[in-house]
Each structure stands twice: as C-alpha cells, then as structure tokens.
Length: 513
Image 1 (tube, rainbow, N blue to C red):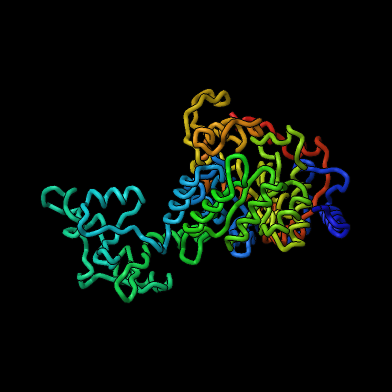
Image 2 (image 1 turned 90 degrees about the vertical axis):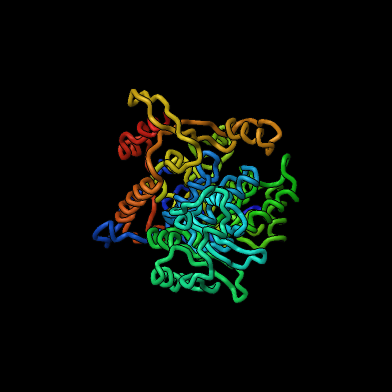
C-alpha cells in the first residue's frame, strides 16, 4: 500500500550515491568518515549560523531538540534548551495534568508578554498573595475588581516597610500601589516590545499592565522578560517573547482511546502550543494512522510524528499529514529495540528518510545514536533537519531526574549522578503503571544507566556548537544548508574508526557509571 515508487527508489539511490553511502548495506555513524573539502573560512568563529527550519511556523536557531523522555525533559530542560536556541519536547507518556503543568511553567518563564497574568482581588490577604507568588514563581501581582478591571499592582516593595500589625492577614488593598496613583503607568494591548521597553525605562518600572479602553486587564509586560530576551538573543521565542511550547500525545491503544487523546490535545492547545508531537515506537501502524487522521480533522496545528526507520514509514506519515517525521528505532544508548531485530542503522535510515520527506516538502529529526558533535554533523549531512538528543543532555543540571550521590570507581569517591533510562524500560513502565497510564508491564525495549552530572546545559551546548564549528570549517560550510550541500562520506573500517577516535569508546563507557 505504501510501497515506494520506482522514481522514489531511484531518488534514494542517487542521494546515497552522492553522499558516498553504500546502496547494498545499511550503515551508522561510525561506519563513515568525513573528508575535508576546500574551505574559504579563515577562522571557525566566522561560523555563527546554526539555524534550521523544522516546521512551517518554526525555525530552530540551533538544530538540537531535547528528547521526549522522562529521564531527560521536564520544564527546566525545555526552558534551558530553548534559551540556547533549540527546542524542548516533553514526554507524551506523562499524565496529561503533568504535561499541562510543564506547559504552564514554560509559558510563564522569562516571558516578555504574559497574556493571562496572575491576578488577585483587593480584599484578599497578603498571605494569599504570597502563596500565589510562590506557586507561579512571580514577583508581582495585578489587583483587579469583580469585572477584571485593574485597580492596582502588588510587589514586595509595597509591604517591605509595613509597620502595622498582622502583616500576613492585611488586605492587599491597603498595601498595593493603586491605579489612582499619578505615576501609575499602563499601556494598550498590542504595544510593540520596543515601545514597551522605552516606557519601562523612562518610568523606571518593572511591570507594564496592558489595559483596554474599559480598564480591563488584557496582559502584562515585564522588564525581567525583556531583559531575558536581550540577554539570550539566540533563544527560541515567539513574537511575544515567550518560549515555544510543543504538545505531546501517544496514539490510541490498550490504555488510550481516541476521545481521551483528542481531549488532551484540546487542553494543550489552550496553553498555546505551536506544534504537536504524536509519538509511538511504531508509527508505521494503524494506531498512528487513526490518531493522526483524527487530530488533523479536528485541529489546525503542525504535527511531528514518529518513530520509524523505514522510508515507507516516512511516506506513510507524510501522506497522513505529518509536517515532520522523527526517524530512529533502536540506535539510542538506552533503547534496546534492535535486540528484537527491528530497525535500520541510523545513518542510512536518516539518509533514506530525508529523500522521501523532501519530496513531500517535509522535514525529519534524527532521533537516537548521537554520541557527539561528529555524529550531529553526520546526521545533518545525511539529510536531517535537526537531531534529538538524549544521552548528551541526560547528565546536565537541568535534565528531569534528581541528582543523587553515587560511588565512582573511576574517581574513587562519590559524585553526583542521574538516572538515564529509555521510554520502554522497566523503570519508565513502572512509573506509568503507578500513574494509571499503562495497565501492565510489557517486554522491555529499554534499559537504565547512571550518568554523572556534567554541569549546566549551556556549557554542553556551547561545547557541541564549538565542535560543530570545527567540523564545518573543514567542510567549508558556514551554515547548515551549506553543510548539507557540501558534506559527503567515505566508508571506513572498524580499524579506521579506532585510528581516528582514539579512546572515545573507552571514555563513553566510563561516562556510564
């Protein structure tokens, strides 16, 4: 039904031939080397453009996506990776309430424009206001009346010098800065960020309420949000200075019915998601087909779908309406799907998938098997538009699991480490059973390892980008598009790989405690 046409097969063969990949055997990253090409780049610092278009409405500033795994991506990871210009995608197997909480945190983090600011009433107490501030991690609240008309604003400076009794039980109306104050500044909805920046600076204020002609609150612009926008110019933000939110769902099956999944999409749409991931290990399937068709029928939103490693599966998903396909079955360090016998070695899978996706005007994500900047570059040259990273981000401070002290044989002392486990591992399945999103344990297709904490994500990203700069300078590519056009491969033997990487595989084993 979804067999490739003769023309499609020939297009795949031509792409493989042009890239130096074999036609009669599938290969992965370590099977190929990158020859240098003439380079007009005088210094690696000239390479600054790592942007890549992923969806019709979304261009990444760096081609990195944090893996939608419980042991990698939560709200902190999404915020951290998007500060750097990449994209964060939360796990689809978390309970929907947890996914909504993550989206809410991302929505409000470092946001220049807040469409629905946290508001309180003048009759509430300061203790109630402080509780709201702690819950939403904000430093100020708008005060409104019953009709949502702005009556004031409350921040810590309003009660800092209070010398009356029972501060906690004091009504907000006695403490707030009132709109009747002659210095109170507001703006109309729709004000540009540049105009807002001027108002905040001229009036030396930190918050600018957006109020319509009737005095009703329609939003809030914060100096803090504008500061973060300028401090992280590479960050992935929307037109209002907010981090991008991507929703996620699984597919219909034993523990998920269609109405429940569609309700999950609706709830996430209300959080302003820019795209939706529909994720399953078997996306070339009737379950994925029925889920994608139903979502496309009811919602107008770009869809990322996966995973598959078969170009037929890519064709299948593109014809269903997926805008981006996630490619990879079993290449990840904690994924054991290949032990079942299914999956195509990742570099060949990515190369073949890219040909089919391009013919439909779609994009692909190389998901799994990435061990360093060399593999990132190889995946991009093969045809990926972005790479999904799990292992490389699992040990960062912002990854989802808590860090715990463990004994390291290498250093003969305790170090801080985190658990990194596959989405189909026993650990992930037990968590889902406890949450009620999985009825019983299945044959595991994942495992758990322990990885040392390596520091903040920003340090990891900068290290990877510097490595990419070096590789790109050898190829003579100033951006991802040139890299994909100029880069090609040579087959190499196992001895040839060892000659080049020296102790890389030994170090990789040591990093997994």
